[in-house]
Image (cartoon, rainbow, N blue to C red; front, side, top):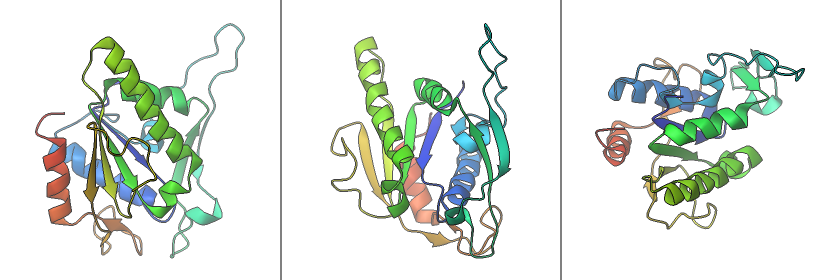
Length: 200
């Protein structure tokens, strides 16, 4: 893994599209050329080779198809392309080991997602391992589209920074092409990259 930034977000209600847009912005801003440099699991899942069977164990399953869950359908009836792997957790943990920054896009849908809350717990486990090994922590930036107060464990810890942001209409430009897709405003993007820093 060559992950430098890892993202955690809820896919529903245009979260998928926002994560795709932000990944593209960060890869350009920081000149990160590897597909997993800004780790967004549904993108990386399509690119990391699927392991072959070992000692009669079945190989990892990979399913790339439209995500037909009803809550994923947009206002224009479009479904995003999903990529599901049975080894997603191992890949995510591996990405955490090399990343220097974790970005959480905290929306109402995030709080409702068991998967997202599991990723928050994984951050704390990773930082526990780093403390024991004498390594710098995984810095976490919580982009609060809605208040995360009392919702995310460890929100007041020095390794976690809160950044209040707003959903800015994408207006059909570039990767924010669908109706009601959203992006970060120029000011919010500057604030985010200032928190990330110059080197990741």
